[in-house]
Each structure stands twice: as C-alpha cells, then as structure tokens.
Image 1 (cartoon, rainbow, N blue to C red):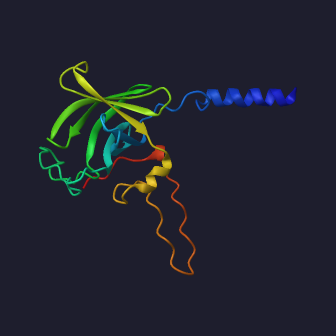
Image 2: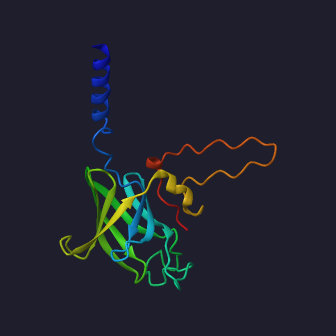
Image 3: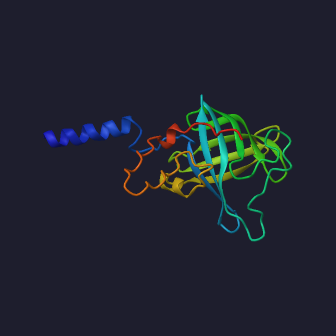
Amino acid sequence: MRAILLVVVALVSLIATGHGLYADPSPLGLWQAVDDDTKQPTGWFLIRQQNGVYAGIIAKMFLKPGEDPNAVCDQCKDDRKDHPWLGLELIRGMQQEKPDKYAGGTILDPRDGKIYKATMTVSPDGQTLIVRGYLGVELLGRNQYWQRLPDTAMSQLDPSVNPNPPAPAPAPGKKPAAPNTMAPNMMMAPKKP
C-alpha cells in the first residue's frame, strides 16, 4: 500500500509541476524552419528573453548552392542595416499575452528589409512554434511552423551566436574548465553588434 501511495504522490507532483502531460509553452530555445516544398531545413532560430521581452536571431543557415554565406541585410532600414544574416535579430519586442501566445512584436524579412507585425504561439506539446507575420490585422498574415530542436543541437551553432559555447580544450597537464551552467531557459537577449 505504501508503494502505491508513493507512486500516486509522484504522479500528482509531476502533473502539478507541468512535467507530466504537457510541456512548458515557452518559446525559449532553438527552433528549425523547413522549406514547405522540399521539407529541407532553411534555418535555425534562437529565441531568448530579457526582462519579459522575447527576441529571436538567425542561429544557423542552410544555404542553397550559389547563396552567399556572408550575406548582409543590405535592404534593412534600421539598426540592422548591413548586419550579417548569421546572428541577425529577426524577431523583436514579443511579450507574453496568454500562456502559449506571444505578441506585440515584429519580424524582419532580411531578403527585402520589410518588417511585419508578428505573433508566436507555442503548441500544447511545446514542440512547434507558430510564427505569424502580418500587415495591419493578424487575420491577414502568413504562418511559419518551426520545430523545437533538442538542447544538444546548441553544440552545432557557430560560437558567435551560441549562448553556451563549448569550453575550449584544456592545455596539456591542466584541469578542464568548469562547465557552463547557464540553462537554455535562462538565456538572455542577444548582444548588439
């Protein structure tokens, strides 16, 4: 009887903290977008927050043959003008509106420099981020569906955009550096160039 009671208490505890049936509806972390036609990855996007405001950068690019790996936002009209695409802040100013929805921000299309109003909605399982860009009213917009990547994917990011870069290898005869303990959900806003 005591064993059954312990199992019930453990299950209730998991459900009460949100780890049992539903994932955290937070947009924080690393997300992958895929091409609607080819289903191939087009980019990875890192969402971070500072003081309740969420922002997202281009964290990894998947280029087609002939595309410039050093592309810059030459069509941008604000402080992002001529900023390299890698690390470029696409999403700005998002704030939590509902437990699973973030609004009040904008999203940039770096190909033409246009800025759209935007919302982000996290799926109930926490594995899909619906990013909607629109002009005027939200009804007149377009969705992109980004899939959450595991925390281990952070190791594949360029060190210039990785909030948790791997520690350098220790010199022969030296102790390894202490691991970075910054949890992915504690990530801060990107640094300005």
